Amino acid sequence: MPLSAPLALVISWQAVHAVQQQLDPALVSQSQKLVRRAAYIDGWKSSRIDSGGFVESQIMDQPEPLAFTVKVNRALPHQKKPWTQGLEFTSDGKRLIETSGSYPSTEVSYIRTLDATTGEELMKTSAGLEGAFVEGITELNGLYYAITYHDRRLLTYDHEFKLLAMHTFPMHEGWGLTQSTTKNSLLVTNGSAWLTTIRVPEGGVGDFLVSGAKQITCFGKPVSQVNELEMVDDFMGLGPTVLGNIMNTRLVLLIDPESAYCKGVLSLSDGHLEAIETKESEGLHVANGIAFNKATGRFIVTGKNWDQMFDVSVIRSSSGEATSCLKSHLLLEVKSAENPLRCR
Image (cartoon, rainbow, N blue to C red; front, side, top):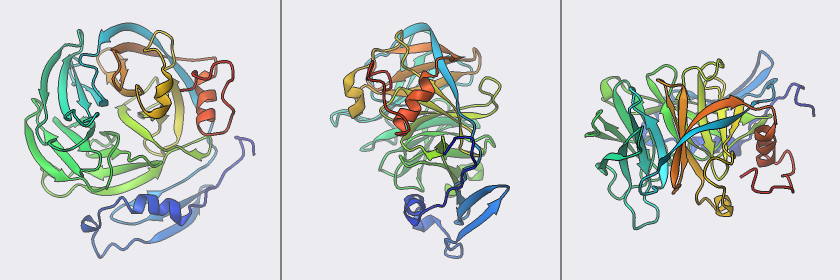
């Protein structure tokens, strides 16, 4: 079927269950029974679960995603080469916030701040992360929120990373985390192909509840394992965009937060970045961590146990490499035999 042809997706109960099982039953009101509804609206078919919000999947005429690459401006030392799970700039662009998961098991999860110019570690804390594996982190309305992998913790910190509160994360698994466009909720991933919205209670008092979920799609196919997330209010004139590393690849997906369609794909296979290693297909040394500096319009990118972080500018690519690699990842195209590492 040509990509320009209209596509309709009928959700299987297995796909619905993948999201449904992530909801904490204790946080779903008994009066809000899970009800499946399907309706054709404006040429697309949605399948919806109501649980204080909804799960929605829709595929319509998706244009081919735009291809992007990076220009490396400079490299910074990645001190102690942590197992990077989240990366974020402070609002003034002077510090980087980085989370490191407890891998290998002898390590302890922590949050640290870095000098954005030199890469020097300024502060480190494991408050609230004892015995847990930390994942993404994001700033929202002057507070920082971090989530854990299987420990179901959603932690609130002040701007100096003093732990303010520990909440129950309303899903059974946490991966990427960023703020929504409305600035009153969080967007999270959990390894599935769903971008989930979690409502932040006013004043931080009360339960953090799932209020909706949209299926991430590209070329009409669901895209799972989208990991570290970053919200950019206006990405290169394309409007609000969520950037997310695709696990075990050098690809960053550019996601429309309203529809969860991919607008584009960014390749981090540039030869001036950290050298690609074969073990990246096994989850080691993978690209993970992308932070947008509003002051400069540039990004810092890094990866798990990378030696360096890189200050990069994102530019349009005419080679088509990024989209070709994404097609390979989605099994729509055979990987290049000339350079099998190209599409890591």
